[in-house]
Structures are given as structure tokens and as C-alpha cells.
Picture 1 (cartoon, rainbow, N blue to C red):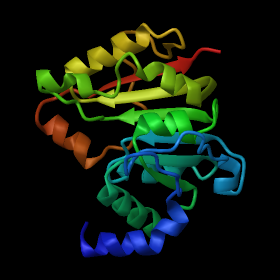
Picture 2 (picture 1 turned 90 degrees about the vertical axis):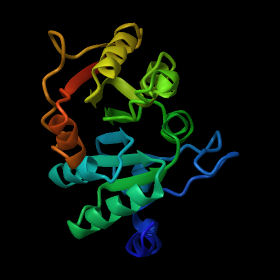
Picture 3 (picture 1 turned 180 degrees about the horizontal axis):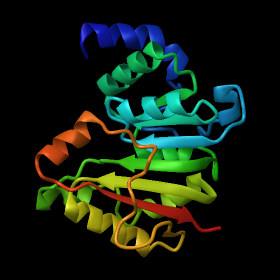
Picture 4 (picture 1 turned 90 degrees about the horizontal axis):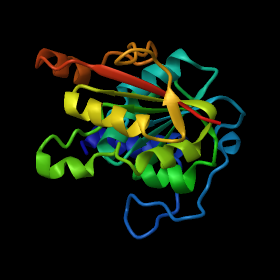
Length: 219
């Protein structure tokens, strides 16, 4: 991290970062480490989590726009989390917490069952080389993990600029017993709560079409 990011981590982490118990790896979470969101945020409110929050542009904008809801940013890269804290603090966002951990373990071990109103997966790593596609997050094992953390009728929102990954996402979620489509037609309309980021603009500049999906947790 840069010197500024190191300073941000030191000064802001106590207010923003959820302290978790680790398992074997530095970004793992020990089973049984479930949190109580109302205790973490000091209130009971709708809870939204973003997997792979990057530098936090989308979730900081969302948290500042929706003060009535609480947000959790899930990211493994410390520098991105530091950037997120700097931006959140700059605009006075207090309804946001960060988790430095692998997303599946956050869903399995940290968040209480049926605690999320929405789960966002925006522009996950596409692992676009054929030999690496098996590393993609949205694969057949993902829907049960997402479903466990979402309340009944909770919404899973996804977006990507890689067509083959979008098709994979749709196939995986269409086949999942715990979800049903929350859109009509081929793709979901763009989610109004997803702000345009530099990452998305870069994909558009390269001629890649942005595709959105939305699925509802079946009760």
C-alpha cells in the first residue's frame, strides 16, 4: 500500500473494518465467527453486501445515497479497502463496514443466516483465460452460499462486462433451486443503485457490453 493507504488503515480501520477471527489463511474466517449486524452497526436496518468491492467506488456511493440501509464491503485486497475507507470518511459515510476476507467464507461463517436483503457481485474477476475459468466465483457451488445469507425474497444482483461470464452466471443461477429470475427477457435492466465506475467505463471503452442480472431468493 502507499503511505497514505497505510495511514488510512491505521487511523480508520478501527471505525470501518470488522475484526474477524482467522482460520489457516490470512484472508480466511474461522467457522463459528458469526457477527450480529445490529451490534456492529448500532441499529437494525436493511443490510446489503458487495462481494469484490475493489476500491469501493460503487459501495461508498450506495452507502452515501442510502443512509437508511447498512452496507458491508467484502474484499481481499487491503489497498482497495484502504481506498474505500478514505473515500467513505471523506464524504462522512458511517453506515459501511469492511471485511478483508474470502467471500465464500464471509457468507458461510461471518454473516448470520438470512441476514442480507441484497447481495451484489459487480464485475468479478472474469478469469478469462480458458485454463483459469474454474476459478470464477459464480459457479455451481456459489448459489447455495448466497442463498444461505439472503433472507426470503432477498435479491442477488450481478453485473459483468465479459459475455461468456454473463452467460455462465445466468446458466448457474437459472439452474439453482434457491433462486428465481427477477427480470424479464434476456438480461436485467441496469440496476439504478450501481453507479458508473472507472472500471466499467474502461470495459465500455474496449467495446464490451455490460450485462446485468437479478435473482430473487426463493422462500
